[in-house]
Image (cartoon, rainbow over the protein chains, first blue to last red):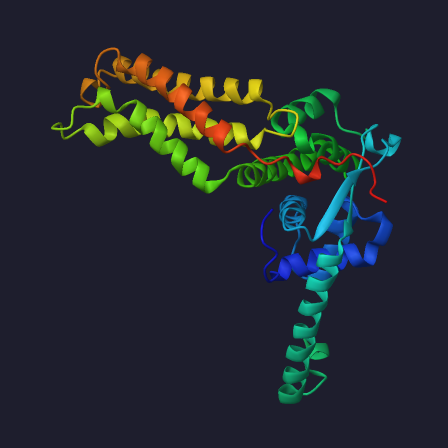
Length: 116
Length: 182
């Protein structure tokens, strides 16, 4: 198993998507939520698979196959959920992001992001 | 049509690693809008998931040792005082390593049994031997291993790599779980 070191930005996006989606986190829904979070950057489903694979290898998420459904042509979904180590890593990343936000808000004012 | 043509799905499925074929084909099916979008999505996804599986299933240290073992197995076919020694050794070694890397992309917990590993190594060493036929056809005798060494080297390499894989067995994939955890 790979060592769970600091998270990249896209890994944070994917973990946040998993956190928001709870029990409905699989490839398609994760990509859609990640697309909303990463807007205006485009998120490809291939990048989502690669990142989920890496996060699973780090032990931050786990996955299982659901039952097959007709709307998927009789194929199963691979569902994902955050593991405790993933929650901790995301919390640490969020705390760091909050510090960055506070510092930039001090320097540029709290309305700068809305102006963009 | 609200779903992809079966023949296209079968073709895409053939390229995808078995470990993720089910969910990737299901996701592509769910996102299907038209044939062009499906083909574009499949072309974007397939290389990335194959590379991801190669990265996940390849231990860099074992891979390096494997390269050394294969190179050593062909060493008798490359005279040391020859300026072409390095390319003579490198060509079959790189061919075998590329095949092993590619096979790692398609390996899963099921496919990593001893029989499958043995077969993969045999194919890789076959590819190493095949490079000599290609060089022969191209009349590049200066880059070829000496007589008999391709076959002897392939056999020795096969044995060395099997021994290496036995000493350093591959880890089982973590995502092999098929039921929801409690």
